[in-house]
Amino acid sequence: MDSSGSAIKIENVWKVFGNTSNEAIDAIQNKRISKTEALERYNSVIGVSDVSFDVKHGEIFCVMGLSGSGKSTLVRHINRLLEPTSGKILINGQDVMSLDRESLQELRNKKIGMVFQNFALMPHRSVVDNIAMPLEIRGISKNDRLDAANKILDIVELQGWGNKFAHELSGGMQQRVGLARALAADPDFLLMDEPFSALDPLIRRQLQSEFIKLSKQMKKTTVFITHDLDEAVRVGHRIAIMRDGKVIQVGTPEEIVVNPADDYVADFVKGISRLKVVQAKSIMQSIEKFENKNGKLSNDLEIVKEDDLLSKLIETSASKDKPVIVHNSQNQIVGVISQADLLKAVIEGGDGE
Image (tube, rainbow, N blue to C red):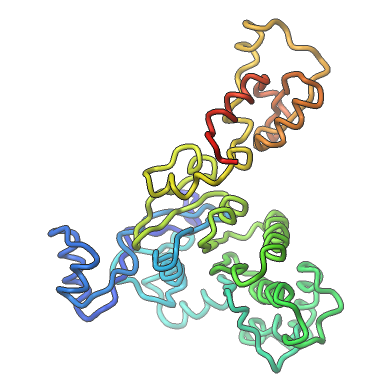
């Protein structure tokens, strides 16, 4: 395991499509030519441009960008469905590029599960057989793989649907099967490429909620690709925003909304309300500072957690028209939030909502 704490580490990864990819990279790095010039001079297309980031164990790391930004190209490098032109990819400290064919196959079959936008279910197989397929590929006995598949059915709330076929399921249910299939082999990592984007908004939000709940239970390290910033903010612990093959900014939803790296990111986040991303720990003040100014705190104040969002803080404070006490994960007092603190947090957010 990587001693740095990174489950996945991407280091200076480039992907250039074309027969003169190395010459194109050299010209981009040394002559500062643009993507358009690379295409014109070298007949090369820049898919991913010098990308670096790390993903922590158990984290949902969202890669967000518009069509053509390079996000789906990038995620396919993690399990070497695409080979990078240059750069390093480390999984638990192991260089994926150094793996031989057999080791790479083992990584894909046992360590990494993938969920696609288009479900990719086998129409001639039942739901339970679709879910069990990764275990079948690994040579697991029929009884054992069906037993495992049925347990996963319960987790994704598809009890009673095991003997149905794909065409008998709604889109949302089919995507649950896709997720269940990825989880069946109990992988350490999930790669999810726009898994909910083909669904209507109501079903999409429902599956987002179910996935967030599932992630808290199973603690899978997840790279989640999306073109929807609202989805990234809702699902991700951290977000990488991509444009033209480059990562523009990496940060928590709060960091990206409150401190966008440039005008491009600022345009994206201007419709995201601070109520959805600002946490208690970012706006609280010390007990000592508060009491020096306002006197001793009373004993009947409401308690919130340090990662509670601004929307919940306002609701809690308004119920008693008093400050709120902030606790950490060990239930220790770490600060206090006054109503003035709440008002300042909302006003500084501009017109997000």
